[in-house]
Image 1 (tube, one colour):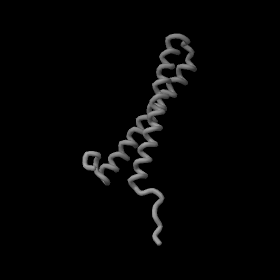
Image 2 (cartoon, rainbow, N blue to C red):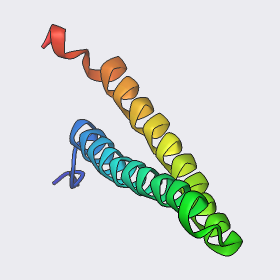
Image 3 (cartoon, rainbow, N blue to C red):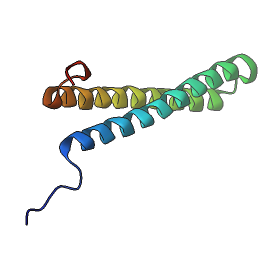
Image 4 (tube, helix red, strand yellow):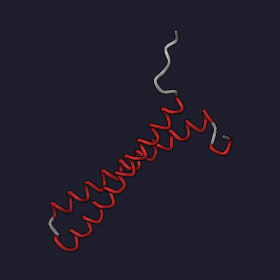
Length: 89
């Protein structure tokens, strides 16, 4: 009796793509909210600690968003190479 993989490669790629897209989407919204908070703090509070914290969160979340987006696209390209695009299915 052969040992089968728990998930075949195609399903695994689709799940990893969906998971990275989900996390990337969350990071995008954190970055947007942190940027808005940073702008509001600059205009109203002008406390340097709050500005630096909001800007730092915005920068880190933007970096994570772009990194996740790149990873998700690489999963999609790998899927397209191995199994064809949606047009060909």
